[in-house]
Image 1 (cartoon, rainbow, N blue to C red):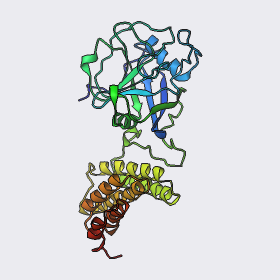
Image 2: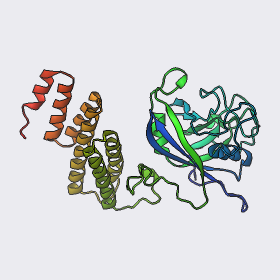
Image 3: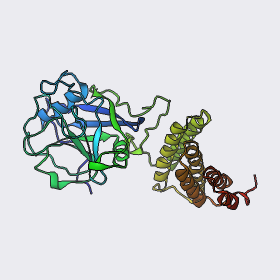
Image 4: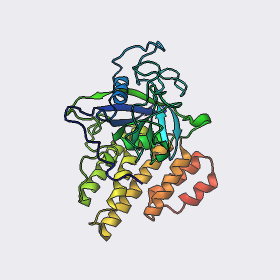
Length: 341
């Protein structure tokens, strides 16, 4: 559940502008996307300034650690699904370090803002008045942290990227098994584009995550066009044998497609068309995963494709390919023989 008016930023004094910062994140060496945050400088100016300067790296080398006061190159070292993602250890990288722009640690500024919704940006600490550079982003309401951790911002765009990080598998000490790195970060000038649309510089005019849209049209035709656009980009990447990029576009297409069902204009014909399109996308996704060596994922997508559209010959074919890939000959025979091409 989210707090009432959660999307509204705290009212800023006339002379104070809440800055926006960005973090570009990779997962396992693959670019995932951009997180854009608003910092509540109007409420917690010192805490907000600490994060802003750590995004730009403008303060240079830390006096206490001798390392750059910069988030760039640091990782999200702790992930707890259904709770939060934590990063910002600029010195040790494992949650034991970090340094603020004010010195090793600085005080809790105030606890005016609450952990009232997902996407709240808050300071990690080891007790009262021990703020450094480490921060966390909530993935749900966490009222038990109120009065203990200083909230200083919110995610404006890129919550989908946060969710992707949240779902990375973890090992000991909740550390992600894949490296989740901030490869670039900085401050966005006032009035400047946030860089979320066409982030991958491929000409795609729809943001990767529907929640990052500035406006959400009511017409189902608009959403179906978005689905077809993402699918077309996926097909182009597949032809270029860039299977990871193709898979990313197919996932995007499915995200937009899932929202089509919420529109009032859905009738039987549109519903049938959407199911056919979803089956095709899942079949293509299966092919990508097979090319990338993910046989279990390929089989799962092929199975889902068949559920959406009975008689999808390509989906049967993908299942057969997975069977061959895994050297399960009887499995392949069971699924390949009934298909006529």
